[in-house]
Length: 113
Length: 115
Image (cartoon, rainbow over the protein chains, first blue to last red):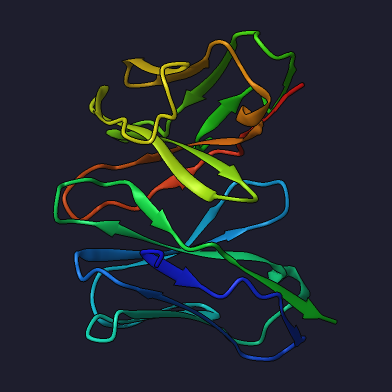
């Protein structure tokens, strides 16, 4: 079992739809959570970064963390064709002081005009 | 800010040759990370530095890989000798490295092809 599970998709939605992207993790030592967007042949771009359980909003993006369920989500409102990319969840394992990111495998999102 | 800078952006080399990848982190960031991305294995950590000191190199595949950070504004990842299975995209990322500021910012990557 992978430490971080993420549905690879592809997820195809019409323009304007609300998109829900999700990851689950197995170890409660994961404490800091991030979402990255990666366009084809580009580097990952940080979208959201959160520590606490609950919601964090930034424009059309909302990150949600449920530590009791070991489940994180990214919601995209009013999705646009320019949102078509691979979305990666990532988290940091805090127990050992190691600060490297553990990534999900990424979900490929396609927003159809 | 220019963000994380990596060079070269593309590298094609023959098996057995030495390859050196370069990274300039964001100014003021204390932590630097090297990751490798492949279709099969996704993004994986190779090594990371904090204040120019290697902290975790458990992801370095074998002795053919080495990394250095001689100062706060420069790091190299060297592969010698290179093999076809090293073909991947190599990313450098930097982080403020302060308590509660662990977010990482990635460079554009170096696409390495070893023939």
